[in-house]
View 1: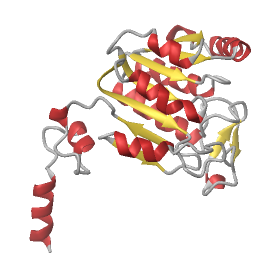
View 2: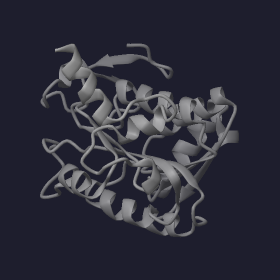
View 3: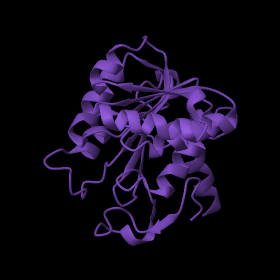
Length: 234
């Protein structure tokens, strides 16, 4: 597995989880997203070209670096990353500067909910939530008025089997309350949402097609046409 930053280590940081040994981690991002999940973030950002990205839970700066590299390669957008621990925030800031990615990144040392509250309404195009698991739903709720229509939110550690999930039913709550959701079954779980998807982009809350109709709005067929094609084929 190709790693943009340093050496690759076989196995997720929780190798005991299902498929844990199929994934890979970086040598200095030990508790952060896997390399596979980092590539997912990179692909989403280079494809969507968000003007403003917010990340909660900077930690070592591992995913911060991947997001910043994606913004740099896309030649578009900036990142605000939030870390409550002052020493971690300082270390991450220095690491990002050493990689010559600082022009795209602002490291904020603050409580994530306070930092989100300080953002302008409807200003965020993309968010990556990776703080303590029990804070993710609170952060998502705080972001509701900060997200632009159609903005993408990626939430890490959504697997019900995550050893640090405790009593938090994160994935269940997301599936209950979000119209457009895609869960990636990585060892610790990573879930993609569009919480502020405009109603005109959603054909039906029961349909599995809405996000695809958003991505391919001009030619992608609706569920009825797909069913008709299937009947004709069989």
